[in-house]
View 1 (cartoon, rainbow, N blue to C red):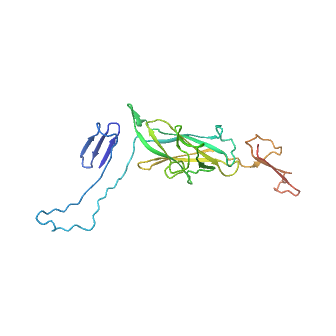
View 2 (cartoon, one colour):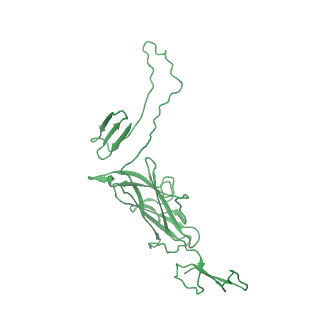
View 3 (tube, rainbow, N blue to C red):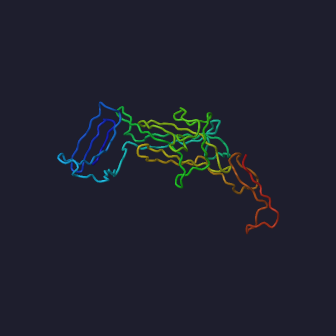
Length: 266
């Protein structure tokens, strides 16, 4: 059997493989639909109720071959990172361990079917930090306090780390309404080596079926030490290099004392 519920018309249709079809109209009732399955095994003999002995165990089961939300296409976009003074960080910037930064992203339902004819479907979801081999997070350690809150559309949802924050068991709760954009922001400290990359992975989790949409972005590029030209030149705050003088011979060796000078830019 196939059961289909249309939130816009509030109609529920049931179709079976043998061609049976029926629908239930809830246009004047509640705003949500619920599906319950139940069953019973009954023994009945009016003349001799004890003639049939029930078994010690019985089971009724239902298997769902598939479930889908056809008007839901969750997306995470416009992922950005800002210094504590509000300056946006770019790929070429350098961050130091311990720096406090604010991470911001926009989540929305990109499916146009979710918003039409003055009707907007709603989907409760959570935004959560991801850290797997395929979707890594590097260089960020979330935190929250009264001056660095977790916010959704500018409203504070948490001032301390708990289950409903970016790294918590649940993630930050959001509701996707139609195709409207929802802004989620949270704070983190830069962790790892100075000049390292900052990579962020987040997942948008649908509450009913626990489906996930991932987004991974490298917010700040890695700035490894590379051989310089010997002059110590470079752009302050960006270029990281070193010189090894005198230069090595053609075999890569030095036979006299060597001075290695590191230029961390600023």
